[in-house]
Image (tube, rainbow, N blue to C red; front, side, top):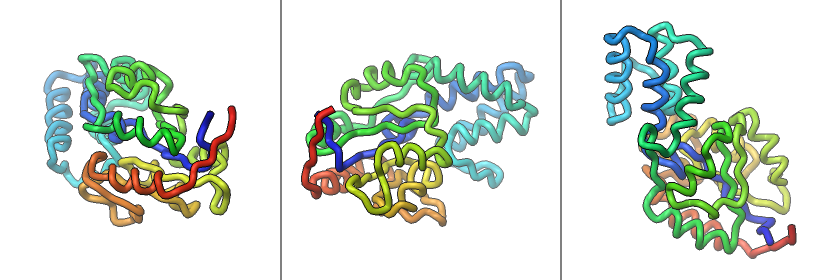
Length: 234
């Protein structure tokens, strides 16, 4: 059986998988062919931002975007960046790119799956996603995985496939750490959003906002449990 009327739509990196391991793996691969001094410069600047600082007015969407910006400043081209990103995904959830789940998320998803379909939507390719979910304790707790979602442009097609219309039988709460990618397309259809951010961008208009995933658990639980359950047979 699957729950047909209530969807919890989750991002992957920075939402259900936390930790800077994959971003650092991407950066190491991206600068691997640069002179040693340039490698150190990029990695030092990356760590400074990841540890809570800022860098020369750069406004990246996330850690991956920051790596792209820093590497491009050193002359790294798009083909090298693409190869580096794929290398980082092959290392996902290994010692080279460690991640973890937010505390308590596995218990929450196990509880909410009684009343909602859990969908994972990520721009990442389908490389080690299921293995990574298993390693961080979320194996079997996601009902559907949508890799290579091409957010934000591809979110419309994904929402259509999930029957999420501005007015329709299916409602959704989207949770993510990038307003433009994860939440804005859902908000545009009049549905609920929850942004993970300590400093939301000025254009963000989420329904809920919190500094990390656990801070949003009460809102997620309340939203899911506020709707009557509709079940359909697969």
